[in-house]
Length: 110
Image (cartoon, helix red, strand yellow):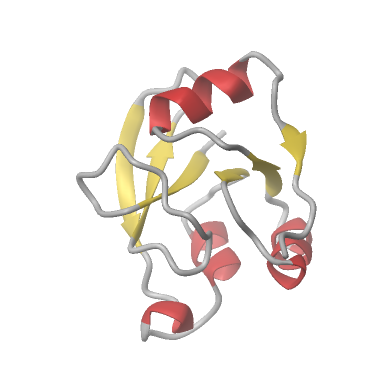
């Protein structure tokens, strides 16, 4: 199991406000250990492809984020990625909420 969390930069602990427009994604294992980062090279960041496709290629199965739109939620689900939303400010806080079953399944943001 691999968990992705959108962050404000490769060395940042701070969560980005929106899933598709973040500079990078932190990758954690099921123990909450940071195993790496993924640069956001999707079309939202000036590259190609969509963020869910990028995460799927990296084996991500869980996404924890602050903001995400309805199309992205559906695309993640189609790619086998379970999406949760959080109000946490840091990677560690978001993981702890997930670990303690405190997160809700994603619903479209406005």
